[in-house]
Amino acid sequence: MTSPQTLSPETSSEQSREYSRPIPRQSQMQGKTVLVTGATGGIGKATAADLVQQGAEVWIVGRNPEKTAAVEREIGAAGHLLADLSMRGEADRVAREFAERVGKLDVLVNNAGAIYNKRQESREGIELTWALNHLAYFIVTRGLLPLLRESRGRIVSVSSAAHAFGKMRWQDPEFKTGYSAWAAYGQSKLANILFTRELAYRERESSVTANALHPGMVASGFNQNNSGLVSRLSSLAAPLSLTDEQGAQTSIYLASSPEVEGQSGLYFARERVIQPAAQALDDAAGKRLWALSESYL
Image 1 (tube, rainbow, N blue to C red):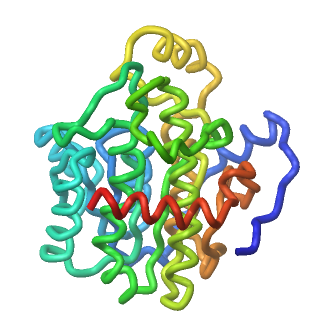
Image 2: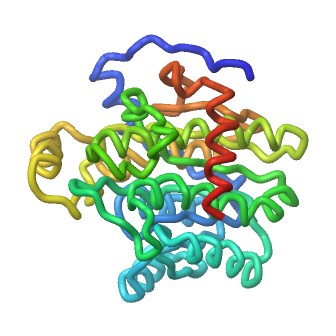
Image 3: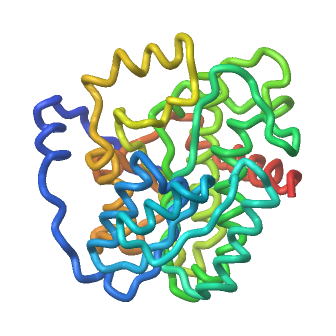
């Protein structure tokens, strides 16, 4: 695969201006169908709301019935699906249910994610960071690929600059020993980029595009499930962080902009292609991750 270009760092004032500019209302989302996971708060909700305003038929995925229904009404979404995406069976069901109920998909935004201060497991016995931040992306995308191929659709996966300190623990991806919240999170965000690049390669003949992104440091409810040092660090950083709407802009850009038509397998930040860390450009690791992910099915 061709490596994306490297961009020079920008000053904080330039970043502020870029994030604060208005997003133009673009008619190209009229008639488009979008599915956004993790859309009941944070940048997922902001992404879904903006795409609704651009004219898209947006469906959202959430876990809490009351909250998900309330967000659907608030942003004017077309509908919602309920699932705990840390569960493989529910991630697979969401894809099947969406295909049966809607039957059309132009853009999939893989957004659901979390960081866990202490090691936890899903009801299926899988470490939650790995289950939600990576396996959910893999399973939902895999189930919706037939619809995306029909529409020559886009897959947008929210990663993070945290991938740069991530390392794949091939023998213990679930951190059954030596758990660290940041190490588990960094691995999952690295997996998002490796998955995206391998997916782009596999879909190179189908016109489906797949790109990953760093949303920036966002002051949202992302880390409210934690206590202790992880939560305190997030609270200290909040005054310097982006709003949900600012953090959503690169997701919105990749979902809707004609500028990225046909671009695939890339990593974006501030609506620009940037070079991810070296370990995210390892094609052999991408293929190995794909095989490892399939072993969970």
